[in-house]
Image (cartoon, rainbow, N blue to C red):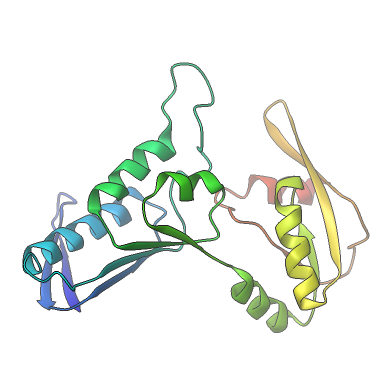
Amino acid sequence: MNYQIKKFNDGQLTAKIIENGNIDIKIRGNSYEDLFKAATIKEAWDAENSTNKNAVATLTLCCLIGQRSDRRFNKGESFDLKVISNFINAMKFDKISILHPHSPISLALINNSEKISHLEFVEKAFRAIGNPILVSPDAGAYKTTHEIAERLGADLVPSNKVRVNGAPVISIQGEVKGKECLIVDDLADGGGPLNSWRRN
């Protein structure tokens, strides 16, 4: 299925279906604009397929926006992942695939969702670098990184992350100086933890 996206000067997005059939939308998914783009495509597709009960619509998100906000952290604050999930659910896709979601809460909140393993992407980088040491950036990523290290036959160095006055401080629990390393994590948007590694 083919479609066109047009963006107006004020930022408005509109979609047009060029060729009908099953739809498989693949977007990065780390911005509200990405989600709105998917919504406009799906709305146009729904209109074209209102009488086609066999038509299937799928969505692939390479990076789900808001996934680290998987709970209400403080009284009076918004539960952002719930808001985003409600928006996605309103599109009514038959299947939604999410690349290595940060939290299982994402899969619980988003209807018809499934996890895409990031193993093949890590393996591709691992082979391209030349069998580096895998580094787990924090305790939350250790289990997944350990499983990948076992699959690839790679050496693994864990790290601990604590926050000091709100800033992440990372302590690497092994020798990596002068060695090729591959950090395996699900999110790295601001680069704050990487900066704290350089300081240490």
